[in-house]
Image 1 (cartoon, helix red, strand yellow):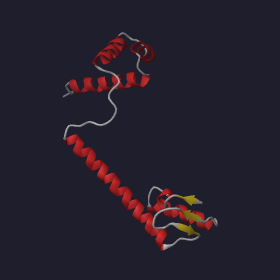
Image 2: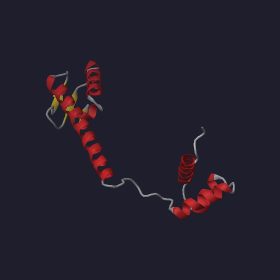
Image 3: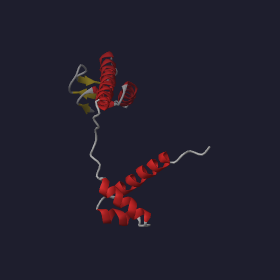
Length: 137
């Protein structure tokens, strides 16, 4: 089996080791094209284990940096993701049509948005309504 780098064998150290052990038990060799474990391997070795551990550490570091970057952006008031499809006018039209009893599909076709956008708009409206209502004593 040929892989670009050892980290392609699994999402973490344990999974990579399990895959390697399974391959070697079945007599399948592993050829790694890049990285510190580059070369052909027919059994587990320290270098393979080390390469997997380093790959997991790299992944953890990337996740941590990504979370920190997103948090910093939020603190600066930046919002990521795609812009909402339904503007205020479409939102009002969706809610008005639903109050009149129209089906989700009819609303979607009439407002020219997807069924998912209608569902999302109605759910957001329901959450907003429940937040506005006083809770029972």
